[in-house]
Length: 151
Image (cartoon, rainbow, N blue to C red; front, side, top):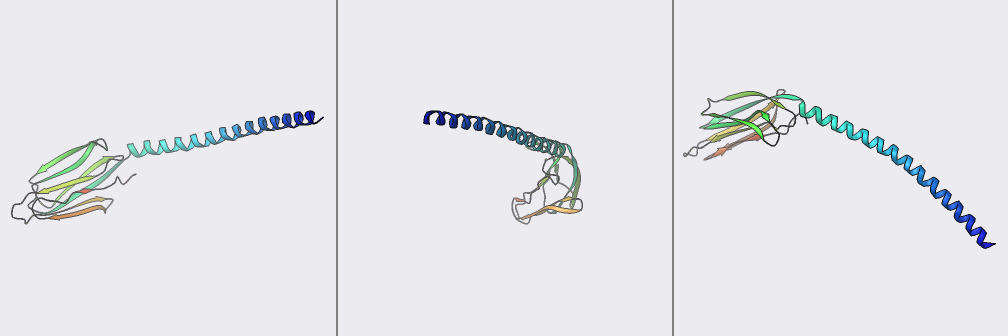
């Protein structure tokens, strides 16, 4: 008799386990669908950010600046297209259009043996500075790099 009760209890437990696991798989499928939707939205957001364009203005002031190198647009975020201006007239200003997560950057370089070189740079986005640096002395480099403002 005990054996038949044990068999019945095991059968009921097995049926309960089967129904419980199938319910979990239903929840799991719903959770997968929700996660998939979240991933799709994130991918859409990255795609939009990567293709969106923005404009920044580089400003450089100082004394004895030999060259200015800056991200001019084009290239990739890890390998941007850079342009160089030798012996720039100061103050120097340049507006460029960049795309996506490409970081705006400007690097003025002053190689003045007298030690009187001075460099200040700014990156302006929508009328507000998003990066500003200064440097003085021999080999002064007051480079500015900012995170893409659309990220």
